[in-house]
Length: 331
Length: 206
Image 1 (tube, chains in turn green, brown):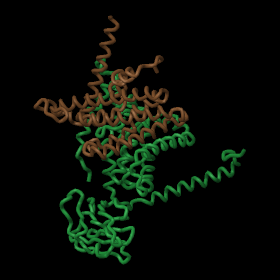
Image 2 (cartoon, rainbow over the protein chains, first blue to last red):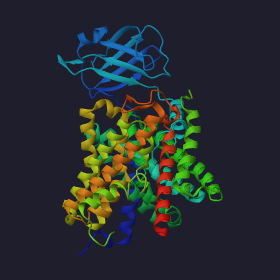
Image 3 (cartoon, rainbow over the protein chains, first blue to last red):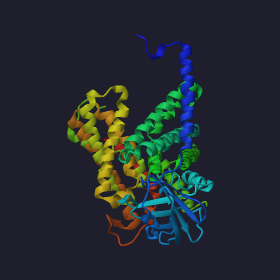
């Protein structure tokens, strides 16, 4: 019997090449499909048009009378929920799918805004109230997410996650760095996949409640995938980092990041920064900890404290010092 | 694995004392550090873990003969994830305030090493009743550990127990700070180690 594995080598090579091209194209395509997500299924996008105008696009036509009533809308900065911006006019486009809100005063587009649309009416049918968040995707937000996840809200020292693996692999510097790098790579892959799955499958089909099951399955799959690819592509690298791959699944950060980015409705770039920050933050934490623990080997420690207890106390001291970063904001 | 089969009572007590998940096995440390600021948080998460542990153990024990050994770990993970989703939805529906306080930790039960470990080591080789009692033991052991940590931190930090004034003053506010979780767990582990060395010494003499 012929099966897929023993076809002639030329055909196999060609298929492999096509598959590779296809995969690259697929990911490039997905990469371009970012943004345009809101919290209400009927509202497709909400963007700043200029400093005075906000444009909201709907999935279908809305009613004229509803759109002309300014009392139906409210705009405020997320930081000041009780200070509403003055809306001068609301204009509906000709196909009744796009609404432009004109404000009296200029907005500070660097801050996130909340837009409320009360009881959206489409063909006389109420579709419920929509609460939209407007963000200007700019470099600073991304950087503050990255630094935030890495240092200010360090997953190990400020959120107390991933401790099993943290204490297990911080005995030696070389192990710590290996684990940190492997973890960073895997978490970036896993978070990106979870983001796509969440935005394009779970959310459109209203399967939010399956988050936990789907994300944990996806993480295991990613780890298995990285394992297989690394083994084939770079056996040397696999020899150095392969042992840590198994431990990655036992780390709760890897499931906390997809859950966080689903909860906060991050877009692709923000998710990437969060995942990268979480990975690098874990690397930093491991490196710091292993530097101390290598010295602890030579210290005279009371017998009862040897091993884990003293490691916990050192981690506590680190956590105290990391508290100094709390409340800091970059921009 | 023990060579002689244990009674259910022994299985139950094993999880609480000899193999206490927090102080002896040093597994599932994240909630022990992050969420033990008060007795109530500790109790609630402990109950959630107990629920997930018992039901996952029973499920795996029931279907163990149908699981192919090569896909056993993914099967465990998905079983746990299902039960975590159940408890997550239940808590969100019935105790929304406490659920908010626990934040992401309820969902992270899915990544707790202790549950997977019990399935791998125990539930996949034993009958339903033994697995149930083993799961109960581990769950109650975790609950016990969380409650002890919560009690210490709440009394030392706030001078209260379950929100009721006990001491009338706050001895060390430091203990409610999140970072103090590391210290509390470290000290508790040291105490357990010390007690062990003393009992070993006594046995040698006697």
